[in-house]
Length: 337
Image 1 (cartoon, helix red, strand yellow):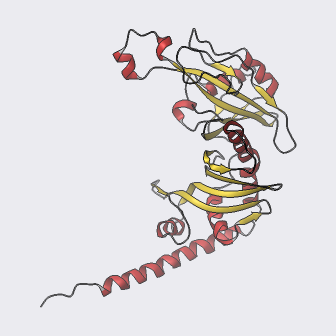
Image 2 (image 1 turned 135 degrees about the horizontal axis):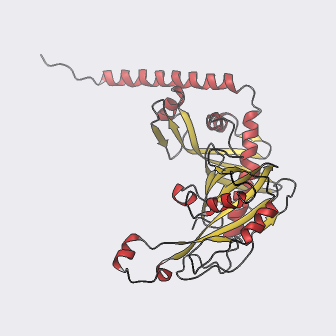
Image 3 (image 1 turned 90 degrees about the horizontal axis):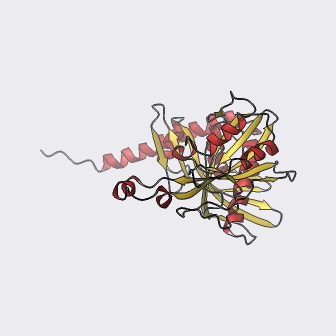
């Protein structure tokens, strides 16, 4: 159930060319309702009330996708849920082949948030990073593509484009450096820690570092010294919102997508799970991650700082392994006569 109100949300941003307005897209969604009799997926609101998700032989209640107006910080968005019926597991179908498909297909859903970054494009946030779900031929993104094609039959969703993409993979190293040197990156943003990070070397081999990453960790120093491509990163930070301190822990990808968990979000206000996850998702997507990317872009001294950080990592490793070699030599077995 990869919906925006689940206890974990993973966001995949994609883009499509389209001159359609959010209102026009919403109207097309409303004529594409879920159809239980044909097991055809379709659109509704992302309201969880009596959603029936997970139940067999049921349809969701009829509801309409919602347009949320801009508040000056967040853009106008179209929020919708695509309901579909999952086929029975292969083993169940084989063991009980006489069962009606109505009895073995369970209702599931995936949410989307759309906005218009400009007049010619539609940005789509999908609440799953699983290609199995997002690339379904009868899934939400293909349905959106069909809607866009009502105005231009040649349009296709571009999986390689994102309105939220970070300016460079260097942002991940910059974040790690800022945690060490200047955690208060803005009056309202204070970095806490790097919980994990991935690095890809020149042979496209990926190493995942977990359980805390800093510049005392040799394998992270090695990744920095060898100029590995870093990312995604697991990061925690505090956002000051008025008198409220909001703590976020997330995994952040270069495309601007992210993963969050209920247990890693702490807000001053008391919110139910749905409101909490929607707030966190929209704040991260439209305010906080773009703000971090903006701060990185404004750091003009970064090229020299990056050089210094890489050089320091090399020197630290040299000193470390000189010491380790000396310690090893001191334990070298003496040859027998």
